[in-house]
Image 1 (cartoon, rainbow, N blue to C red):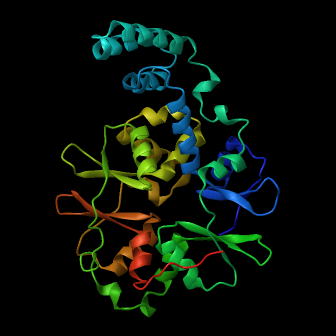
Image 2: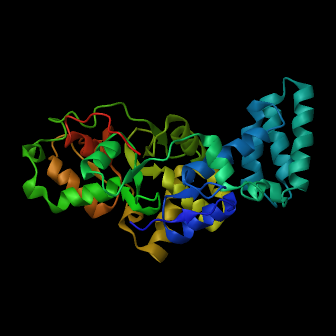
Image 3: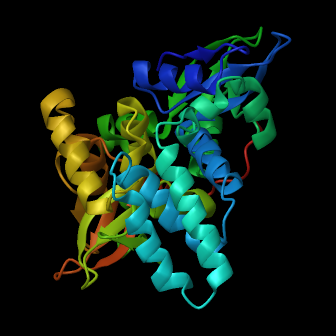
Length: 349
């Protein structure tokens, strides 16, 4: 894959726009001194900033903040906003007159200031550079040299790293090697691979770990926070009977920033997924967004899993039973790892 470099002086807004314009999930950020890279900027980075901004701006009792934030986005511009919030706060804080008075005052302030730029987390970052921000994340830049064996890169990807940069001898970025690239390569050479391909998901002990999911009526911001704090890239979306109805991923945050519609964070997961599928059908026509999720069963063969990952362009397949209850998930990391049974930590530059 072609490599895109974010300049050291780029702001978080600039960096986010580069990801959106180039339809990529992450990019290297140059160091201010121009020698080497400060880190990798991704949608997870901007989501972390988003969460940090609103956590730091919560100037009211913690139990009330979620209601106020929801009001800011879902009731912005509505003349009844303050009254609505007071009713909500009365129900929650009625036993504490002082806290209720504070909440009412905050409700009035939010209604007055609903057009303020401070409600946009990216506008809060106009002066913050991407280089400075990724440095605070303190995450290593995963790279390999162009002369390193492909197996060394594959071993890094099998550890759960989604993409690594390939550098020349001078330290210049030549490209990006992703898990998708490796799985696509495997799909082109299935006839040369070992007998593991005929084994099932169950036989290979895939999809047996506990699965985190979120209910379809929960907010998108709840799903994003869960993924961020658990270092996951996707969650199953289920109905009240725990049957899978969709899939929400960390990369879905790109739709929110692309449309500059941050109210979507406070929509339900079900509404959000319907929205992005509609937008995808109208504009992108990408299979990964036009179907709610892609399932496999415990009896599905590994070869079929690989083919399905390639055909659907997704990063995970949900293991479901006959009633469509989620039993597990098979990711690209799992596929790469199972085809390298003797993986050891690989040295990287």
